[in-house]
Length: 502
Image 1 (cartoon, helix red, strand yellow):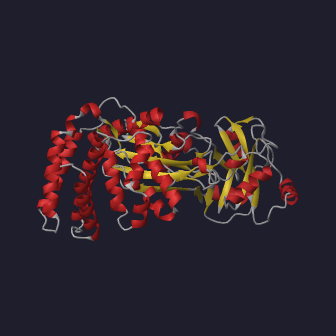
Image 2 (cartoon, one colour; image 1 turned 180 degrees about the vertical axis):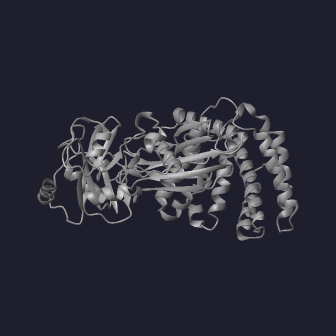
């Protein structure tokens, strides 16, 4: 069962703006099975709850309970099972003796940056800890999760709703049905409940990456999303830290946090080598384009081009990573892959790799005055399109994830990389490729300015460079003569014919 365990109405909590009936309706919309009113120092009686239910014609299947949030020398404690209102300041030990059968939950203990001691979190005077709360920041919610995993006390969620839209956002999951406040107290005291959240281990090439999603869906979206990246070795950590700082500064400098976004960086923890950032809502562009009409396709495709243009307008100070070293290493690896194979296109791709490697060394790696901050892996799978309010088309936004390959280099690298990856990923979606051609992306990227012939030539060069990465990947999967490889080689030849590049 999903229950809202922490909410306040304006009837008995002066700090609240919420009508109690509207709190109930909002919890119902979230598909919760019940709600507990937790007014400050006020305990609704059973008769008052029954009258409230009759007056507002609330379905009997939706459970209504009353507890209260009480001020104590320990902190704010939600008491489930007291028989009277407790308005004032109390000693927790006294209340514990007075109500041995009630459940005591420590509310929002990490609020305002507080770090509770292990001793308090494991105190026998409390039965559970509210580790997730809308009265916590995302960082504070993460700290609650971290302490819970380490100490293994009983934990719950609490929306701490003081406005209608927050009700039901952070419910608690009960293992068994409850029908009375005594049942709730018993389940909490016996640890048969837990926060309603997901913790998902994601793929990470050099770091352990975990996404935590707390609470229920809604419109507008209220679920908290946190991505935690932990680096193992010092070299990886230093690179990750520099990149995170660059993303943080770029967000503040050129992204508006409305239609164009990057993940917010919440914390860079040197001691534990952890970067905590905002998880991104929405869907990957790669999955979204086949599901929408042509008008929406163009809108999202153009947003992706404009986002990249904004990133490249950010003038970063200092070097993110050594592009010359990484490019030399990668192209050397591609040569080894293509020279060691006997697939249909191996020799052609090996010759192309040698030519591109030479031109990069002779031309592009020397243009340090033109280097800008690049994403380094800009493709439809790393582009997130979302909408804050499903009823407001102006709330559509684009954000981008996975800056692990960020570098300082010429802007054409990112542009060409996107074009190659996009066309390869949608090689079986010819209608999409026809509707969303590279000219549309370039127009969105350059805006009112017409790109020069040299810029186009440079973009096409790096499109070929990106195709080497894709072809190498296909070879490693034994797809050296697949239909996907046929598409890649065909587009390489087309690009070479239409542009004087090599």
